[in-house]
Length: 315
Image 1 (spheres, helix red, strand yellow):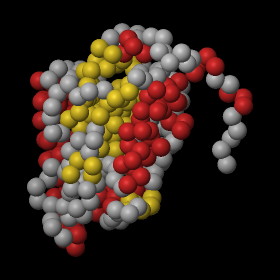
Image 2 (cartoon, one colour):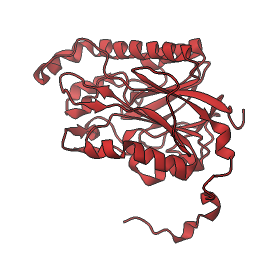
Image 3 (cartoon, helix red, strand yellow):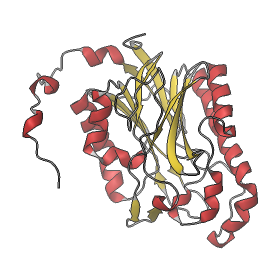
Image 4 (cartoon, one colour):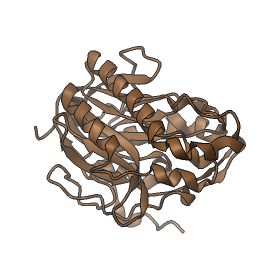
């Protein structure tokens, strides 16, 4: 359908690594090198069970968390984890997710650790329609490397920023090579993975390319991140007239024991949306896409009144 469905039931996950054999000490992590496929399968099993439970609740589209088939390994710099990267089209993880999407007739956004045929690695979200067909992929555009009062993140040791080679299949209605927007049976969907959400041009670009729903799967922690988590999404949803689903891990993962605050949720132009289902690992909300074409109750008309020529370039 050209404009998407009117009311869409959407879900985004909040969970942690499901592999039960994680060590208690970081010194013992190298022993996991021989069981990396088992780690990925345990996490895929867990998320496919969440798809089943979401389907039972009437969910039509679901987004998994950032790097969902693994623990968040970027808290350290350990080359072993690079072997977890998979092909975004023919890898085992995406093959299994495609089967589940078709079985439950659900659109799935699956963020994985991608191994490109060239040997390069990316933090990538793969979009799959309700027949199990690939819609396309989106590679995280901005890669963080730093630390806060709780811990550090070394993502540049594992993957590089998007090269804009996301593919341009018939479902992609975006002309921007870095930010695809897919026309689906439930509306037009875009993705902004974790760190990308902080950059002011990302959601505006997705909205400008036609996105109605933006998923932002993340692994995030720290005081500033927690303070801005809902604020950033609420401002972007109001400013750019879109629905945003923000997803974060919830809990801790051995052996790092870094706490993730969760708080996965949906927000629209008029504010936060209530959860319509109670579930420990899912946020579920009904998105009224018809409301996106309604007159803004504030009286604002930002697209009409915008003056592109007056904004200075950021230095």
